[in-house]
Length: 238
Image 1 (spheres, one colour):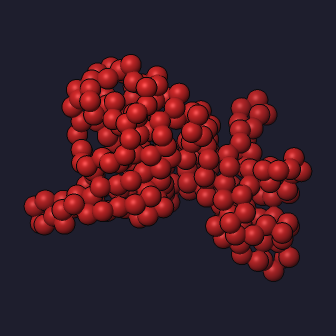
Image 2 (cartoon, helix red, strand yellow):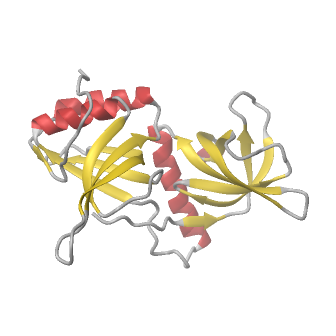
Image 3 (cartoon, helix red, strand yellow):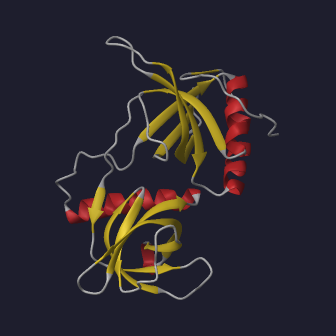
């Protein structure tokens, strides 16, 4: 399946809460834009540097906030003495990921983001399973924090994807934030056949959440999987 590379971004100018993982002190900042994969903001705190980890507290309903861990990927000094900081979300709770997607949807609607109205909120990869052995193998991998799958098209190392693991029954399946760790080309394809690659995926969720989700889904095993390929690695999750 083909990657949709453009993510929907919403431009906003509102105060936000940012802090370091080891501190409750709030860093003064203002959002500039927000996407499923990350955000940028302006701050007068010049001690923030690339590769620092931050906690982003995003607004939610009833004056509440939800927290996402993010890594600083770029810092740009401004003439005002402030700096523009770009971050990439790196650790997101499963429920908070749904809140993030909903927040972007609401902001896009409120701000009438027409320029990217047709852009997807996030790049999407779907895996449909219908074989019991393959379901157990894939869920065992997820429980250990990784997954090998075969897909159409090429991807960037380090790229974040929304991975949908679905089953050929009425159970809703899993919705996970995945990141491409490695890629190998199995078939270059031609004018009639797409390129096939084996992807090694990691996940942007806490490991304990992944294990709980995999354990819950293990009870809904079914038959054969599409987009299968070689899957090295343990399958010992019980």
